[in-house]
Length: 426
Image (cartoon, rainbow, N blue to C red):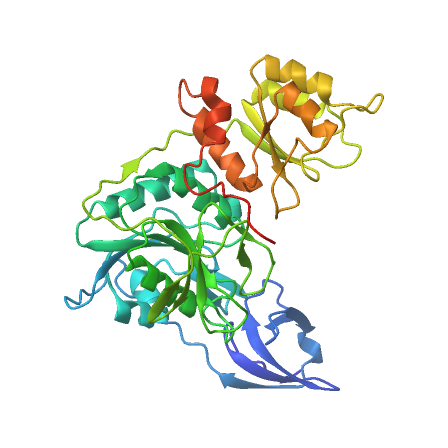
C-alpha cells in the first residue's frame, strides 16, 4: 500500500490499478477507506489498499478565524445604505472540504469576502442573523422573526431598503408571510437566494445579490423576490412576493411569476419596470402585524381521496385550503364518494374551507359546472387565481386575528398584498 500523507481537505490525484482519479479528501471515521469528493460533487469510497500512489495537488489551509464580533460592514459614507438579514440556505453556505458538505457563512466578514460586489455597491449599515436554517426547517415563528428584523431596519431613516437571504425550497411561503405581516410598506423588501453555492463556477448567488441590491435602492415599496430570469448570467426578475413559486428543482431560474407579470427586469446597474407597483414613501410608517395561527392546513385532492380527511382536520384545525381540480372541482354526486355532506357538516360548525387551483396557472370559476355550484352552496370559498401556498399563509394570518373569522370570505377575497389579479390573457 502506498504511503498516504494527505489530510482531509487536500486536493489530490490517486493512482489506482486501472486509472488515476482526482478529488478532495473528505473526513471519514472509517480508517481503512479514503473518502474522495469528485469534481461532479459525488463522494466515493476507496479502500486504502487499492491506492498505488498519491500526489497532493493543493494542500488544505484553514483560514484564519476573524473576529466574529465584527457584525457591521465597514461603512462607506458615499454609498447608499441598506439592511441585510441572513437566514441560511445555499446563498449563505460554502463548501467545507473536510466535511464533504457545506458550512454556514455565519461570520459577517466572511460573507463580505465571498460577496465583495455587494459591499462595493452599497453600505450594509446593519446585518441581522435572526437564525440560520434551511427553509424546510422553518415555521411561522421564523417568518415572524424575519418580519421583526425587517421592521426594525425599515424604521431606520438611513436604510434605503432591506435584503433577506433565504433558502429556495419554501421561499414562497416566507415571501407571502412578509407580504401580509408588513402593512403600509414604505421601502423595498427584497428576498433573494441561490440554487448553487458561491464556491461553484455556476453559482447564481453573486448576480442575484447584486440585482437584489439594485431593487433595494429603487422606489419600489414591495415585498419581492429577486433572482435569475434565465439560466444565463444576464439579468434577474423582481417578482411579487405573493405571486411566485419555485417551479424547478435545480435550474438557476427556478422561480417564476404565477398569474402575474414580473415587476421588473433587473441588471446589476439598471432596472426596467414591467408592471405597476407601490411607490416608496420614506415618510410613511410601516406597520408590523404578526398575528398568526398555525391551525391551518394545505391539502391536495387526488382521485379516490375520501372526505373523511375533513373529519381529521376539523378536529384540531381552524381552516383548510384544498387544491381542487380544474375550474374548482371535488366529488359531489358520485354514490358513496360525495364530499358534500362532510363539507356542509364541518363548515356549518365553523370550519373554514377554501379552494385553490392545483393547476398552478389560471383561475377558479366554480360557476361553469354544476359541481362547482354545489360546492359554493356548501360554503366553500373559491380563491380565484390565488396561489395555494399564499392562500395557506393568508388563511393563517386572518384566523390569527380575533374577530375576523365572521368576515373570513370577504377578507380572503380582499386583495391585501397583490395576491389576487384580474384575469390575464394567455
